[in-house]
Length: 140
Image 1: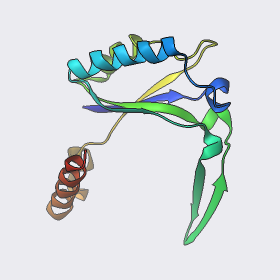
Image 2 (image 1 turned 90 degrees about the vertical axis):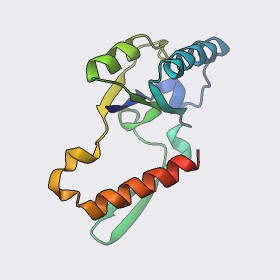
Image 3 (image 1 turned 135 degrees about the vertical axis):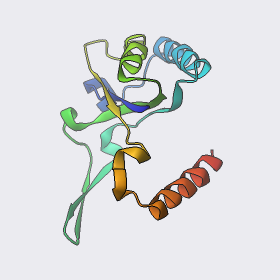
């Protein structure tokens, strides 16, 4: 099972405050543990939302809004974990260094797998998905 681990933004991350050397070192050690255990598929930090944009879809129309965005709707980073269960993902996240000196939140969400789509994922669509996944993984 794959899970996206979503690190919520904080006032500091949205202000562009970079993590301390100590936090970067702790995160590096944690990421090494994740990689060594075969859990971490990917993980990245994100620039503050003032450097981002959102595109709103309404029928055929597209509206672009430049950041910054409300703090409660912004993420500061993520990991992708491959684990056996949500409980295992929770246990790994509980071991993470605290990126929020003043309190914060990390969210865990399961990623869809091909079998989750049932018969809506036709053999042709499954073949396309497999081909695209192989192509994108080959670029890493």
